[in-house]
Structures are given as structure tokens and as C-alpha cells.
Length: 512
Image (cartoon, rainbow, N blue to C red; front, side, top):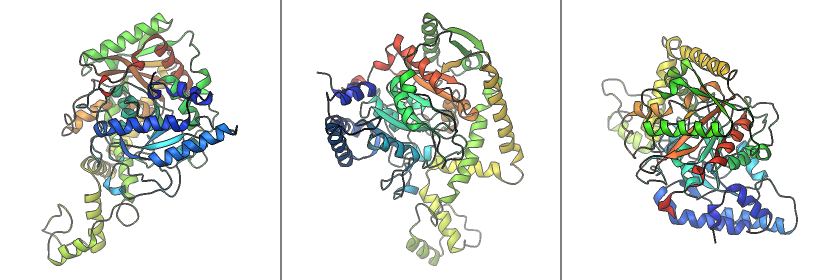
């Protein structure tokens, strides 16, 4: 008999509703899977086993009594560890927030609880969501379930890996420049970045506030639609939340799209694109043609500036957002007893502090040490880049210029969507690379966002799904980008492709 963890979230929900399986049995199956394999994959930072089983038992009692239940009743869901959950550690995979336990739930957590989902644990991520490999986590890297020597992508690498490894049917991630889509592509699953404002950011620990968006990681487009239906909706606590109705995504996702026109971006098929990725994406276009879609070439001329624009804007906003973590108001504080003893002995104030100057005042010394000890190298790099770009004399040359280019990038998309319904192309330039391969070369890592960052800059919706495998058996991803608030169209187009292919049904052979 097939293990329940091999079924999709949609199938599991039906089994739960028809009482073919109980919520307790399903939760136990996933917890056993986590216990068996997470020591190798390291997708989770924290597993809420006992709480999950208690919640599952409560849902089973309510179902047996015929009481009303929520949309996801009994279905386990994993959360990226930067989404506030009342009373549970929410660390951003950083020493800076190692002891933080939020006093409230994020909006999406409240929605999941209202839907009677079972929150099974917090997943690993790049520190403060700054990275593309899940290697900058203070707790160590996550491995790709398809090849444990490879990265799972990032920053939502733990969430993507846990779904790919069948340790949760659904996971919630965040996407600032590709952090849902890139790990979805690397791990062979489906990930959706909703339109900016479609899902509330209340309770999300911010990296770059004008770019961050919460979204689903799932096995299929159908499952992603199911989770998005719960997550999406207006929230008055988020001033950027869109006051527009949300479609019933799960009810329309399987409907075909007649007369679909896909745009293929000329600039996406140039230097740097791996030949296997290109071949898989072009073959996907043939699948769409066979389903009646029209494919035409288009241009996004300012796309080549997306990486530079993204890293200026993202770093500037990170510099501002992370300023609060100073050891006094929020976050890790250095050992003040050690600090005082070092000052008394006349040693330099703080790691790397110059000696040829007057010592810092004690409070400044504490700030300096706390931030130097609490943040990792990648976070420091981006904070310093953003602080420099915002400083006097450089604001106009960098930040203001980046905002102007951001507008040009959005204009390119607006023009393109007058010609086509959706834009299709690669998610990443290459298949998943080896752990440590790009850790010492930040620029090479940043170029991994080449095809994804522009959707965040433009605020549009975009989805990643598997479209093939490399010669080494590594997943390759296809991206679909849609106009603002057209998640329904993107999901239907993805389901249309998945109905004609089986890439999304495959699972890592090494984790049987």
C-alpha cells in the first residue's frame, strides 16, 4: 500500500475528509519521515512533534463529532523560520534572533490555524533570507534531496527540501528576489511568488519591505492553489495589502486556458544559460504548443539591469530594516562582562576595531560588538552595501537611480503583457550546484537570481515548476510570470503543463 506521504496535499485532504486516514495517522507518518531523513537533509530548524499530534487529535475529535472544520483540516504545513509564530522560536536562522519567541502570530499563521492546518515545524533558510543556497544559516546548510552534495537553493531552501523529501505536503516560504522559485526549481517542486500585496506581510520579519512576499511551496500547481487560497486576502494590518477579492484558486486551477499566448524573452537565452536548462525550457514550450498555446518571442530590454537594481534596493532596505538589531532594542547582546574586562585591560573595542583611536563609549561599543557577533558575513555584506548606497553623496547615484530603473523594468512587463498572457522561461541559469561551490564568490551566487529578481522589482506574480532533469539527475525548472493579481491564470497554466507531463510526480530516489 502506498505510503500517505507519497500523495499530494489535495489527495490527502480528500482522504482526511472521507476518513480513509486520520489527522493523527497522517501527522505521525510525516514525523516518522522527518525522524528518518532530516538528519541528512537538515530541512528543519525545529519540529513541533508533540504539539502537532495534539492538534491532529483535536481535529480528529471535531471531525468525528461532525463539527465544522477549516479548509486544510488535518494537513501538516511547514513554515519558513522568519514567519512569527506565537511562543515558538522564530530565529531567521541567525544568532541575532536565536532566543526570539514572538508574542503574536503572523497573519498567515493565523489564517493557517483558522483553516485547521497542523503546523509541523520551522524550516531552515539563509540568514535573514539573504542568500540563494541556504548555506548562510547559523545552524548549517540544508542539502538538496536529489543529491545531498548539492544546494537546495535559497533562501527558502529548507521549505523546498522538506516538500521534495516528502517530509511535509505543503510549506510556506518567502520570495524577495527568487527565494521561493529558485529552491522550487532546484528541488523539483512547484513554488509561487504572489503579486506584491496579495498575501499579508504582517508578522513577517522583514528583509526588503518593498520586495518581500509570502507564498506556497508544494508538489503541484493544484496543491499550491489550495495553500494560496488560505494565505491570500486583504489585511488591514499591512498597509501594502491589496484590497481586491481573491479567486477560489483551488476550484479553477484545473480549468484549461483556451487561446493562451506565452511570451519567450529573447534576453533570457543568452550567455550564461546552461544548455540543459535551455533545452528543457524550449521542450516545455513545445508541450504548450501541443496543448493549443501560441508561443511568441518578446523583449524585456531592461532585464539586464535587474540584478544590479535588485541588490541596490534590497541592500538599502535591509540596512534600514536590520538597524533595529543593536543589542539594546532587539536581538542578541554581546557578553557585557567580557566587554568591560577587555576595556579595562585596554584591548580594542569590538571585533576588528582599529586601535589608533579613542575607545568607543560603552553603549557604542556594545552596539558594535553585538552586531559584529550576531550577524553572519552575508548579512554584514548587504547591510554595509546598503548603508553605503544610502549615505550622503551616494543616494542619488545608487538608490535613486535604482528606483528609476525599477520603473523601467515594470514598464517593460506592462508592455509585454499587452502582447502575451504569460511570460515563460528559465528559473535559474544552471542546475543545482555543489555545496560550497559559490559560497566564496558572492557575485556568482547573485547571478543565480538573473531570471527571478525582475518579478519582485515589478511586483508581479511568478511560478516555478519542474520541466526536466539534467544528465546527472538534477531537477530543472520552468518559470511562468503573469500580470499583477493574475495568480489564477498562472496556476491554471502550470496545471495545464503538469496535466501533460510527469516531472512533478518524480521524487528523490535516495530517500525511499
